[in-house]
Length: 257
Image 1: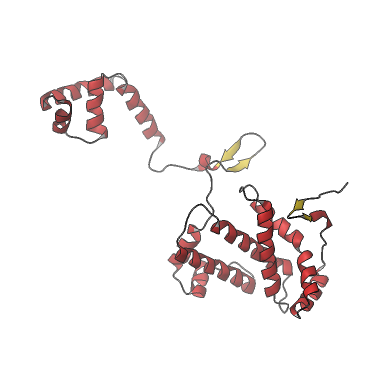
Image 2: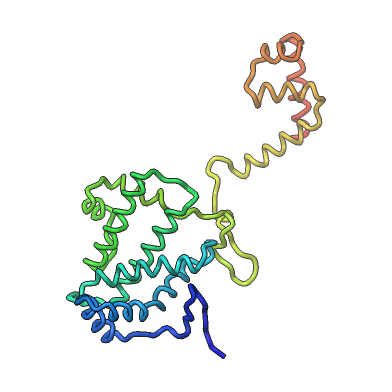
């Protein structure tokens, strides 16, 4: 019986090899000299790394086979561009490249459409961030990214925000074994307070006790913003009658609020 076997893209992951750092560097040197077999062995020996990365993107409804193939593209780009003269572990360089490739794939297949120019700016910013991180060994500031791609900081921030993956209000953010806490549980409406909701329910309850004509007058006056003259013309009575009925309706409603 095979333990920890996962079938993905026709690959039995339990049989994938694991390369030592010394073997990795040896294969990289041979691959950069144009040896195709060394490049193939190098890619094959890092497929487990791709598998570990795509686990971060579970729960998005994406086919894991598709993510694996996209991750492999990122892996190949990383291995082809890796600089052997730098004292950096290959996996340290490969992981952000694989993640970046998968994120680009997810953004291009996103249901939310972003303009081509903004998406291009975002991709330039992401590429610059990866290169600056690799070069300096730390995450660059927005100002550094903006200077690198010759764009304003505002444009960079707007572009990066525009291509963020959408979040469902029903995505769980925490679970301690019982009821989960969802995104919607942590979203606050700054425009409508709890008091507003209570007040609205109270008004609706009070209006339910009115006759149809009085209810219609209140709706037109306070929900549609019409004048007494406009209401009078609509329902075919005088403005004085509208005024009298409105006052009576308000007095009746106050008894229930």
